[in-house]
Every structure is written in structure tokens, then in C-alpha cells.
Length: 350
Image (cartoon, rainbow, N blue to C red; front, side, top):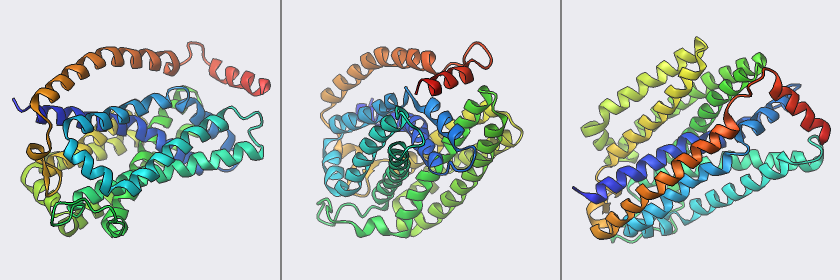
């Protein structure tokens, strides 16, 4: 058994989990930016409840991914750290600012004051910038231009981040996060009995999903010339996954349209998983096309085996802990209307 390939599959699943959980958190910040009008306060409250206090736990999957990549594929990690220093720095700043801003906004004594409004904008803008540069980073890796002809990472490769392909994939990442968040928020609003917000986020999920599909199609067309390794791999291995992704996307829109919100949420998670899965399958066997493959980037098999054992032990502890966390804070209130009363009590206390 190729332990490096097994480890890569585990890391890719961590990426998918981070996308469907952390991505929804970023998307909530996107919708927070557009929360205007007489319903804006209620939208802020819904987003606050949906994110806090579990939002920070989602970053555990990003840490898991970074540590795993460093230990399993150290050569590729080295190259990515140098060549993507600029976008990764923006992502790091965005994550830190977003987290701090959310806390300051959440516990502000006066929700309508300048302090709360300023941090709310920081939270929203950081929620847009972070997934955008994550998408740009993915596009630059897929392009195959991250490493020069001598095999040295291109630390000054800023131009590659401004190509139409990179911009489209960056915007697609933001749109995907917005679609995930809107689909989740539909369920949150429906559970809370707020039909106005339910319909609002239902419409937003449908629109964001359509935008994601259009951007995905554009990215696919641009990949023919901008990311030939990915395009060829897609034709060779990933066509069934791409078709399945499209079918699931249509099914998600249909269930949203028919107001089957919980099914739509599950389908949206599956669509994200299939989308990222098609990328990974298309890029196989490369970690960074066309220089770094699984074979020439992997650490010693004994090191990877020890890491996999550690991952299994860690997941035995982590998964029940996360389940308990989400069960405590995310289960619906047992008494109808209690959530609204609790929110009003908190408002009075502030």
C-alpha cells in the first residue's frame, strides 16, 4: 500500500471538511456585508447565532491540513510556502482580522454604535478577501506555473495571481462560500420560525448557486489553456465526478426551490465534496504540477505511517469532541420561541 497516497486522501478529506464548514463561515461574512435595510439587525443576529460559539472550531481542519502537508510532503510544502507567500499572508491576516472582528462585533455593548459597525465591516471584508485568495492560490497551483523551469519556486510570481483564470477561481471560491452559507442559514432561519429570512436566504442560495455554476463553467473553459495538466487529467479521470457534481448542483437548486431545506443542505455539502474531489482527481499524481508529484515529494514511509497512526488516535478524540460541541450549541431549542425570547433577553442585558 502506498502510504503517501493514503495520507494524501486523508488530507484531501480534511480540505473538503474545512471547505464545507469553514467555507460556510466565510460565506456568512459575505452575507453580513449585504445585510441592509429594516431586516439588517435580524440578519446580523441570525449570523451571530449560526457562527458563535462554534465558528473557531472549524479552523482545526485548516491546521490539520497544514501540519499534515508539512509532514507528508515536506518538499511540496517548502515550495508552496515560498511561491505563495503573498496570498498565504493575505489569507492569514484575513483569518486573524475576521476572528477578532467577529468577537468585537458580537460582544459590542451597542450594536448600532460606530465601534460595532466598524468591526462588522472588517469582519465582512475579511470574509470576502480570505476565500478569494485561497481560490487564487488554488488556481496558481493548478496552472503549473508556480515553479520555474529549473525547479525553483517563483516567490515573485504576482502576475500569475492576476490572470483571468486565477481571478475567476478566486471569485468562484467566494461564491461557493456564499452558497454554502445561504443554504445553511435557510435551515437556521426555518428552525427559528422566521419565514421572511427563510425566503430571503433561499433566494440568495439560488442566486449564489447560479453564480458559482457560471464561474465554474468559465474556469473550466479557461483551464484548457491556463491549466492544461488539470484539463488533461479531468478528461482522463474526472469526467464522471464532474458530471456528478453538475447533477448534484441541479438537485440542490431543485430542493431549495421546493423548500426541502435540510435535503438541500446535505446536497450542497455533497456538491462541494465532489467539486474538490474532481480537482484532486484531475491533478493526480501531482501535488504541484508539473514538478512535484506524490512520489518525489513524499516523506519517508515510516514517518508517514507514524503520522497516520497519530491521525487515527487524534480523530478518536477530536470527532466526539466536535460532535459534542455542535450538539450543545447547534441543536434547536426544545421550546418554540425560546430562542427569540433568549435573544430579547440578551438585547435587554446589553
